[in-house]
Every structure is written in structure tokens, then in C-alpha cells.
Image 1 (cartoon, one colour):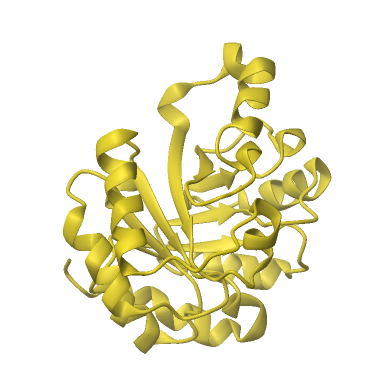
Image 2 (spheres, rainbow, N blue to C red):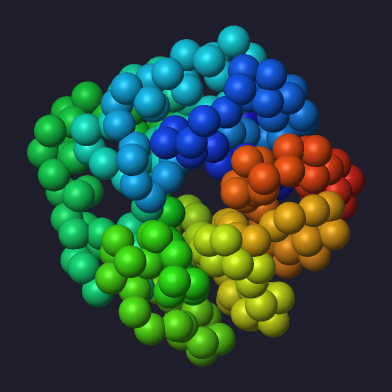
Length: 230
């Protein structure tokens, strides 16, 4: 399935413990895809472990690459984040350059999806890691969205609130200026209503932390998103 058609995805953190039963329920939930990714503690070992356990199911699986060392064959897609509002340039193009030096000759570019990230929650781990120290306002976010689509021609603009539910007005403003670039939204989705609200605005809703806090609530987000037209 083309990621352009994804409406809902679960993000599973390889550094967090999850049971086989919980993974099965996520994989069989009707979600469009599982994304393996996290901000810290990601190793080749825990990525491979999660991949082997998920591969029993037919759901598409993407690796969101945060460390070059954890890249491994076997995924359907490789999501490559470039953090547009990072102050540490290695997160804009540095680790990407290192990865291409090492793996560029063997990459299947059909499987590689570049994501233009805009991190809005400055208190989250990803913000600390990448040096995002200023909260972008609506005008900033719109400018980053335009940068993703028109300057860099990125297939995905990812609005990352990471643990915090976003401002629908800002998500709507970003959506309004995007035509070809898909808008991914992630952050603070705790239940079906949260998922529904963001699915009205974004192309794809990513559900993460609540998987580990309340699996039943996480599973309700799938149908909430899939039953909505966009």
C-alpha cells in the first residue's frame, strides 16, 4: 500500500517493552501501517527483535531512521526524518549524509520516504536531541510546511507534538497550504475523539504513547480515523 493512502499508523518504540499479544492486536487492528521508531535507546538489536515479531502479520512496516547503526533490510519503507526547525544541523542533513556514504549504493529509493519534521513541543525528547528550543507559532509552521512542499519537494510534512495534543488551528493552517505533500500529525492522541479531531485536518494520524498507557484506547483510534472521509 502506498503511504500516500495511509490514514492511520501506530508508532512502536523499540526501546519500550510490548507483549506479543499487544503487537498482534496492533497489527490486526486495521491500521494502515506500523512505524518502528523512537528518540533514544534505539539499537540494531531491539529493532531486529521488533521487526521479527511484527513480520508474522501482513501489516506494512516502516523503520523511521534515527540512528544509522539501526538500519537493517526487511522493512517495507524507510522513513527518513529531516528536522526543519532543528538548530543542530546533523538532524537536518548530517546523519543523512553519513547514512548515504555507508548505504547509498544499496538503497532502494522506492522504499525511502523523506519526512520534513516540524517539532512543536520543545519539552519532548526529540526536541532536546535535535536542538529545537523555540516554540514555532502558526506563521512558523506554515512557513515550514511551504518549505517542505515547495523548496524541498518532500513527500511528507510531519507535525510532531510528541506527547502533547496539538493546536487544531495550527494543524489546519498547515493543511491549508499543502497540496502534494502529505500532512502527518503525531502527538497526544489518547482516544477515538482526539484521533477523529486530527483526522479531519491531517492526511495521516500517528498514534504512539497511548499504546503503552492504555492499549484499548489506542485501538479505538483506528476505526475513528478509518471511518472518516478526508
